[in-house]
Image 1 (tube, one colour):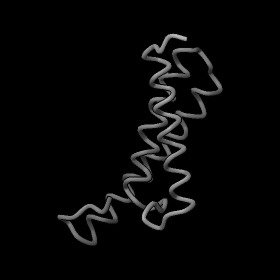
Image 2: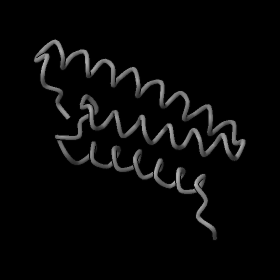
Image 3: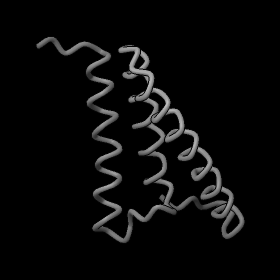
Image 4: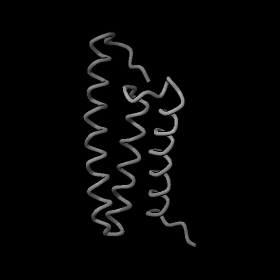
Length: 92
């Protein structure tokens, strides 16, 4: 098996989303309202979106496009809430 950039992107994207999910289940510091959780989801879904697009796997593309939009919206909400509480400190 040859590790192409596309396959590498898919593997890294999968790891990002799974790590965020697993850590959210077991660690308080990785709640869904933290920047680190949502940034991991944005990165993971973006990489998986590229992977699905490269394979022309349209259901996978749609799933990850929606996942990324939701994660981006949540990231913006977290940043907005953080800036209102303390303008100079972002909680990772």
